[in-house]
Amino acid sequence: MLNTNTRFAPLEDHLSRDHGIDPARRAETNDHTFLKRKTLETLRIHLAADGNTINGYKDRIANAEARLRAINPAYTGNHGLDLATRWQTGQPAIASLGNKTSLVPELINMRTDLAYDNGVKIGSRARWETVAMCCEAAANAAEAAAAGGQ
Image (tube, rainbow, N blue to C red; front, side, top):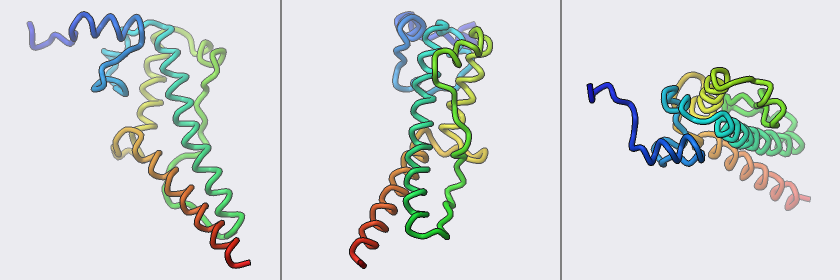
């Protein structure tokens, strides 16, 4: 009986379900059983926050690559990340997704996009953050070199 119990401490359940406060080990979880216990409003908050996070990374990478292409038109990124797909983060768009039954899979898909690259688990947000930082550093260096050469 206890081996199949997936419930954590009652306080953790309360904080997660009613206030959207998750323990660190569960903050970015894709566990359907855990996520379906959250309230509708908490799921909407998580969708907006995670969507803004991933869209922000995509914007940073796209802007840095545009700066690199301005200096070197032959530049092409080789990170393989999908920069074209945008996650809906506005409350009307999230509300149109419907009830908890449809929001939980959407949140799982979004978190999977954050944590996976071409089907290979790459670990949380590290890949997106690393690519964004590297592209920005390369763009800054290329702009400095171009300015120094003139």
